[in-house]
Length: 155
Image 1 (spheres, rainbow, N blue to C red):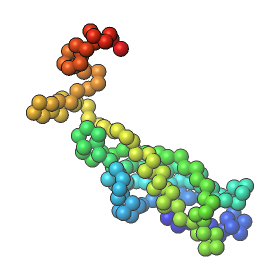
Image 2 (cartoon, rainbow, N blue to C red):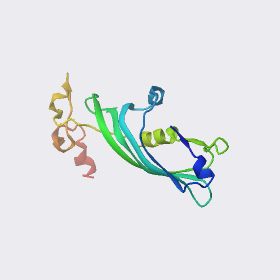
Image 3 (cartoon, one colour):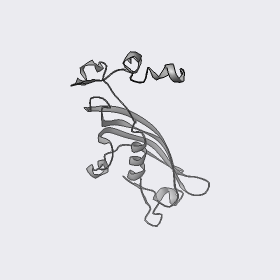
Image 4 (cartoon, rainbow, N blue to C red):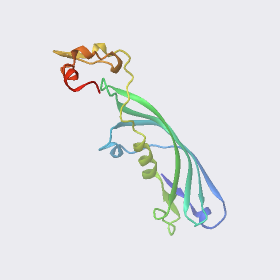
């Protein structure tokens, strides 16, 4: 996403308002846990700060598709990110353009949750000799180390 910054560099404007949908090429998804993104929208203001560096302030929102932590099915995870970026070296001031697509993508990747699930009933997740338990349902009597409490005390 390339923004023309000619008016900022020549002091015709104090800020450029950016309000647009954003799409990412498929190669951005490689080597990430994100399966896809949709409805990504940027609402931001681009201006020059005191040091004459470009500064982008705004909100990036949309939906990312990720794998459910329990069922491994594809689920949508909504995100809304406050963007505060200062471009010191990335601005091609001689060309009067600024490409912000990489910065937007980096902010999205940082929002990927470590664990996210929409599964309400974990009882159907079981197999031969195993089953998935919720943390509060865990039974101490099935713990093979429960007898060790008598020897070492309860900790």
